[in-house]
Image 1 (spheres, rainbow, N blue to C red):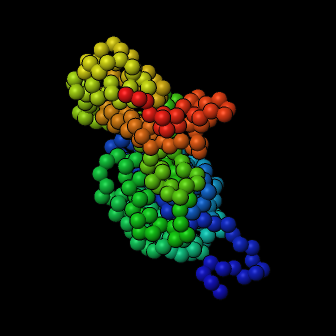
Image 2: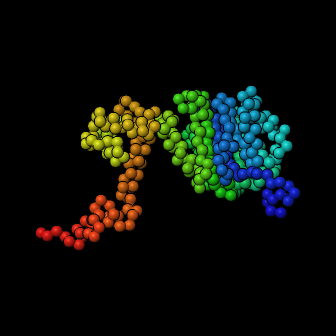
Image 3: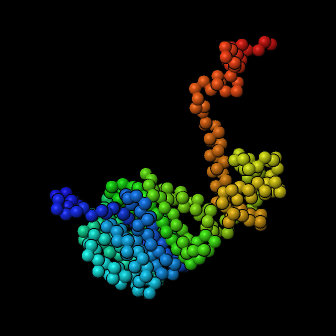
Length: 343
């Protein structure tokens, strides 16, 4: 019988290959989960987190009750190891489950049932746990643990690096499909209206981790304030002229390139920020965030490429457009080619 096969008399249990990380940042008081799977919309199943409480990842033959019940136990002050024990000990299908938990203090624990499909396993370290099943090899979870421990930066950077490290070692041996990242901290959500500081998902994509990185870059620019103020760029004449040129390319500025940060330029730039949902990046101190400058440059370059590479999609467009001749006559473009002007 092949690996993972069940006798004809036994129902096949739905499960999916997944690798994930649960983690805590004590300096910033953030708890998070990042996950990838060869399964549609993994973000709807695996990640659970609550500010000042902890985080849970439930996977393999995922028991969704592990999420809310685990957070409820963590909220009562139960430690990560005891939460894992309480959740799995009363579950008759525990040997098909996989679970990772980190508590409010950063203690972590994990569980891999004996019936999880190979390779399945986990690693637990200071402030984190990584776990995976139906993986190409044990090296996947080893690389994930190493990446989390050695990657500098804040929790989003470390979680994304951990997923990428797992995928570089082969990841889910069946392929790639979806990914998600959930990070919570007190009043971290939009306008401090919730604790969901980062909440992004890729439900179906051929390269979900790379797509998750792309989405996070835009999410970060739009909603977060993670940049170091020491990196702010002074608006020098060269910067002002560059911004004027780029804003003109994408249709926000129609004035002269004066190299001055004058009222028309400021108005065009503010309109660009507003229409891009970047109001949180607006400043009035003569400096700009480098991420905004980078995004503006990328947009203007993309528009320039679009203009220079766009080709007519209609064969014989010049015989059908505004320059076309009435029936029975040659089009104006052809006349110019066949009958050059005298002189």
